[in-house]
Image 1: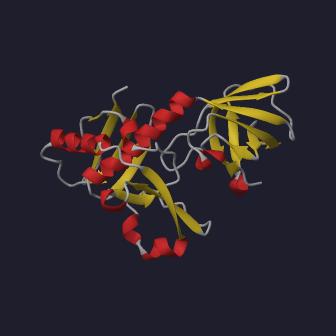
Image 2 (image 1 turned 30 degrees about the vertical axis):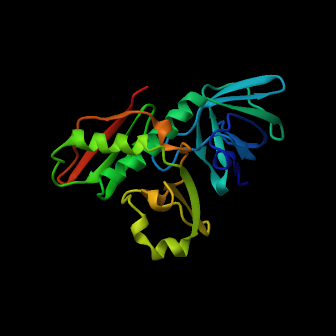
Length: 240
């Protein structure tokens, strides 16, 4: 059964009710409407808690199940809510919000380094992108300054939707070589940073993002790492 993606409707939602539609053989909890983002696209699954009449369980992460279902993974084995139970989902909001800030920051990093992306990972307070970059940049400090200038512009971050066919006709929208865009559902979500003459980025993405770039805060670029003959890893760190 497909889970409704509440985090897609409102990434700032911290609590939400749901109904348990089933339990997996591994002890996962399937819900009809998920507040928790499931691991995917380089972004970790959300953590938090699940409450029901007579019980509570800590959720360590969420993963994608069969048929579009979201499965919540308990932190430790124990009592689980039965199928059909009404539950309250509570997000580890501070962790999720840091993921949102880092993820949007990585989109901006792909703006200041306009090279093909060969990999990436969103983390807690830090993230990284791997680039097809035969030679390292001459001035990392200048890149960091450009990145923070984009953050400081407090650009609006929004979403658009296009069809799979429209994406296929515009391959330039896809920056990431290692992760395929989320296609197959008939339409694809695009994350837009800035609008009109102020637009700086537009690319397919299924993750959670902040509403404005100013929320990211000051970021720093770490030491570049060489990963193979032409790949270089660039990491960014939140200031708080």
